[in-house]
Amino acid sequence: MDDGRREIAGGGLFVRDNVIEQVGLTADLPQTADTILDLTDHVVLPGLVNTHHHMYQTLTRALVQESDLFTWLKTLYPIWANLRDEAIYISTLTALAELALSGCTTSSDHLYIYPNDCTLDSQIRAAAEIGVRFHAARGSMSLGESQGGLPPDRVTEDEAFILKDSQRLIEQYHDPSRHAMLRVVLAPCSPFSVTPDLMRQSAELARAYGVRMHTHLAETLDEEEFCLESFGQRPVPYIESLGWTGEDVWHAHCVHMSQPEIDLFARTQTGVAHCPSSNMILASGIAPVVAWRRAGVPVGLGVDGSASNDGNDLLGEARLAMLLQKVAPARYLSQGSGGRGGFAGDAEAMSARQALELATRGGAAVLGRDDIGYLAPGMSADFIAVNLNRLRYAGAHDPVAAMVYCQTQGIDLSVINGRIVVQDGRLATLEIEPVFRRHHEIALSMIRGEA
Ligand SMILES: [Zn+2]
Image (cartoon, rainbow, N blue to C red; front, side, top):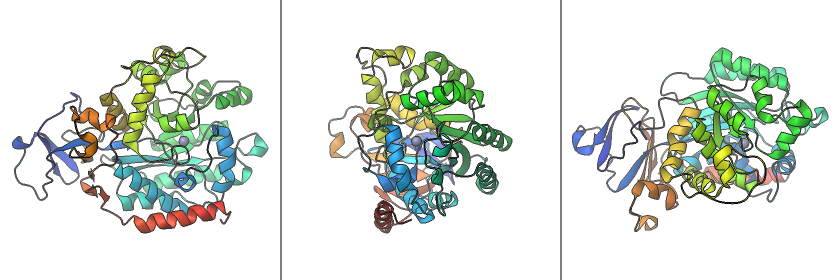
């Protein structure tokens, strides 16, 4: 995934501390090292980057089914109101463990609901324990039902407090340095759950500190209708009027965009997190990924929250991204989405390598990182390896494409910032069984309404 998209048979990496020093033929690398990982018969890839998630939703998987976004949200908000800080911590460990085992080495999480004693700090602690590079997005909701918003008032927060807490988190945790393991992002939840004022003030605060901005946008036609009714504008012009375009911004979903809106994102280098599983489960639509790429919009992949996926499998998401573009009606490929049309796919719409690119350097660009996403000297030592001696790869002629086509399930090795996080297909940094037993207890108590 380097600039030349090189694929090196018999290749290797030489890493010192947390940084890649050399990439090339194994025979040309230094022959001694403190630790030697023999990855014969493995495919080695840059670590995958997840650009959109709500990890607390692992507690409500496979719960609300066959619902569109607004119905799904309104059913889940009262259950999420029972979240406590321990639930945030345990669900983050669970989601990140699952992500790491699927090849993810960097993840963002968009935590926008803070009932009871919930904090973002607990998520940050969990990410450090698992060892995954983390972009913690301080989300927020302030527009309750009584003011015309979608969420019940009791899961919203006071805007002055949101801004104060956002500032505290940036000052306490944000690390702008190269190879940073932790960055903070400001992320009001969506047009239908925060006020225009909070969007504007969050942008000002983010830019004053040089942190990135993230939100949900143009996810469904219901949202488009909400924006037209409430603000007299479609989602993209609305968000643009609040200062939410630019190379320091990325939006989740963006399923419903016109070609001029796509061109605006390309011109301003506004990024997008594409979440194919979620878009299919909630029947939101097919995002115009091919049109984005053609226009030059930065695109990464996201698994999205675990109540609308309901898994944390980033390589699986790359596969779905590829397949969905192949069957997308032609209009998505030529002019962005919108309107109703006939149905004709395009087998060449996306290749396995392009899907892997979205999952690696695409996601890195969306998160504003120039130190991860591909393997080259000077880059962070984030890489994964998959053993080809598996039943599922028998007869596969192209080992790189096989990572996507042959439904890779779990990777064998993951190194993040020079530290082994997954070894022999198991998490090396934490004993996960007690975590997911506790996770299940908490999930049940939330359904019973025990906050
Ligand atoms: Zn989301």
